[in-house]
Amino acid sequence: MKALRVITSEGGEAILDEAAVREFAASLRGPVLLAGDRDYDEARKLFNGMIDHRPAVIARCTGAADVVAAVRFAREHDLRISMKGGGHGVAGKAVCDGGLTIEFSRMKSIRVDPAARIVRAEPGVIGAELDRETQAFALATPVGTVSTTGIAGLTLGGGQSWLASKHGFAIDNLLSVDIVTADGTLRSVSATQHEDLFWAVRGAGHNFGVVTSFEYRLHPVGPVLGGLVIHPLSQAVEVLRFYREFTASQPDELQTWAGILTLPDGNKVVALVPFHMGSLDQGERLVAPLRRFGNPMADTVGRLPYVAMQQIFDAAFPPGRLNYWKSATRSSKRASNTRTECPRRSPPFSSPSYTAPIAGWARPKPRTSTVTCNTTRSSYPAGPAPPTRHETSTGRESSSQHGSRISRAPPMLTTSATRARSAPAAPTATITYDLRSSRPSTIRPISSV
Image (cartoon, rainbow, N blue to C red; front, side, top):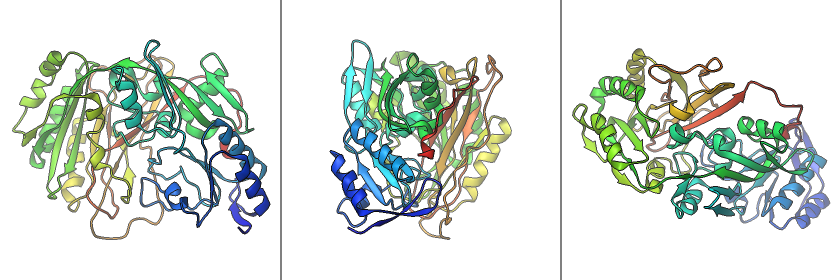
């Protein structure tokens, strides 16, 4: 092994001594991977095939002690640092170029306490794995709408889910975390312990430390009512206007998404995607107007296990595609017209627009405002090369004055199709940041390690 050329925390270049790397590797239970090692390429692989970052060192941690050692090593040698849980973040920030990537694929412990309705999980867990264990007790917590997403980045960024209108986002159900801060100290953080740091991690993502364990509140969730109602694209304006009125009065137990998507044969359609938890008879009554509207091409709505609804979009989100996402926030009848124009003009297999309401529990509360980013992807089987740099956009801020409520149609999170070259693609992911009115005390962000 030769000395490594690395990138520092400030973006400069430096040389990392061979002996330092050997000493670091010897201090971990998990392996340290360098370029050329057998598992190196697999460990740095991300969901977004457009991102090809090459860390100087990958620490495949097996527990909190390994993470502490990794953070201290990065601090000692002034290394750029990143953390990879599920690797699903489209911007590719989970893996850094030339620095140290802390990789969590071996940290997948899940412990469910059904009596207390609490689950604790490590950062390598993905949504499907957490759902499987919690549903063994007919319980669940909000962890996204694509089950292959890692819980760590999703939670620290907000965590939209089918349960959001009833139970809030993942961030709202987070009870505590164990976190390694920039000084290499492992802390247990909650509303009563290091509360300023707990405030910070619920919205500031990974910027205040490396989380090694998440504790969530669980809710009773049994079989649900869900599926897709698909209409021709020619009816998109009418369907989206109906959708806006339909979602204006839906109860918290019902969450409905809308999207313009592309079928495997290249034809574009508009789809309504209802999800209802609670009484199935009540769900049938509530969803009946949506199923009766217009002349749908297909209707797959029915009783489903919760885990099946959580996986309904998985096939549309395979890893390795070249992804480029954009977003916007709109709530108007005029927006219904706007949202149909881009898919009409785009080539076959381009990605659709998806819309989700901020409703029920997820509406802004007193002392809270939300900045929401709903993102979508476009994929082309042929055409111009994708952009050479990856960009993400938070679109517009959707916020409220303290204590205000939404009296009519809830604000819609709407995505717009853009370009990248790959195979067919579909639905969206949503990231929501919770910003409290008070300010935390001064905490050194992890990016300064």
